[in-house]
Amino acid sequence: MVAHPATFDIEFMKTVLNQWNFPNFSVDFLDSHLMANDLFTEERNYLDNLIERFNISERERHHALNDAVMTANVFIKLLQHYDQSVIKNPKQLIDKIDENCRVNEGYS
Image (cartoon, rainbow, N blue to C red; front, side, top):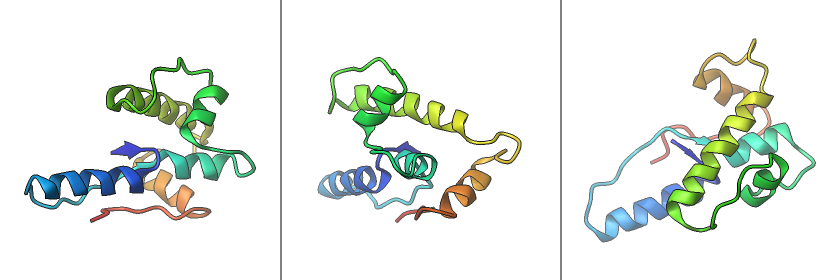
């Protein structure tokens, strides 16, 4: 799963699932906010900032589908900033981000 910021989204999903008596879950994720913080250490890296920085077509914010589409587009742009000769799989990406940022794997 990719989210921006992932910890907020996962806690929100867990709260709703608990309200509906669904079982708890564990999910591996990449946090595009942490990725942006790793790449752009001196910048504001909120979703709105990245949408503007990457010239992504803005959709109505705080609408689940729109936010998901914009986050996906931001994630793709962020991936393009990593050295593809070094980063060849998600584990390597997580390790790279983890050098500078806290990354959660298997959040439960």
